[in-house]
Image 1 (cartoon, rainbow, N blue to C red):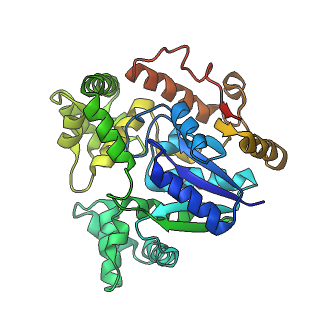
Image 2: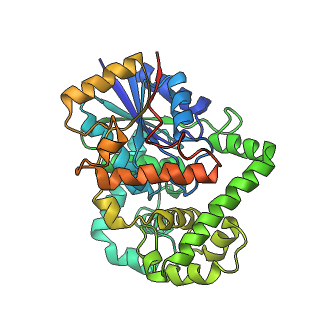
Image 3: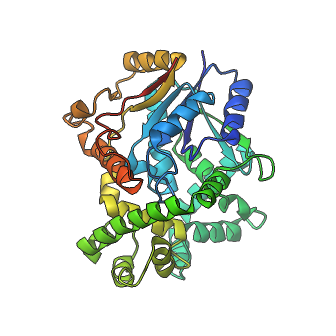
Length: 368
């Protein structure tokens, strides 16, 4: 029996995800698929379009056997921290053989060579990297510029595409798993997650405006309550961002405007969005580095139930069956409390019942 593992957001699940799953199973002669999926907040720093339960259910209906939640501290972190959390959970399950992921490159050999180059500049060229960063470049842009100077024939587009960036981070953190990548289907062939989100928002302008205003109100309130020094401690912060955000928050009339006022050549749109989510929850690099790993099932089918039993038997990673018990478990309580809070904040944003939709009440969805 062979099991594929994927790290994903499914925001929302679409035909491109199904394409990856089907091709990975076929090419790797695999029997099962386990997904480590972000909960209610995304890696680019915004709430999911649909909640984690709906997205997990749709994924199982689309071919995934078991969907597990990626802890919030990883799901709204940098690409490297996101990949670290997802890959390490998959490896600790003890039953996953292959990590599968889409990429714009679709060339595993090319991706692995790029990882070697990244490792080389981190070890051999730290001063040169710092010099480029001092000129106002973002870290990804500085890294790309330095590699291009070392390897003139290097195609630096591999470092600018979002799925390639995640693919490189998966490969940097992988240890015991084999890797498989498939070339991402381009626009015009399948409807992407961003297409689906855009269409939904265009079809629901009033709801979208309400959700965005509630989210902005929460973020703005938190930013007013904390100091610039506390903002600077968040995982995605940088020099001077705390003061910049504190000064701009009084003028911005929306989250979009706030981000645009703060972003710069060095601090990208997505990084500022991540910073704001992390500030809302108080997530620092120390919290991420000390975070626990655990299994939190969101949805599964009959085969997924079998996989879950195997994890409990073969792995020592904690499996969360009850939130009250988990919050008393010293091994994982300090990390899972953010998942519980994230669901509450998400439900406030979307106007959902705080009791019925809380993590204390919701149970894993079974599709038998």
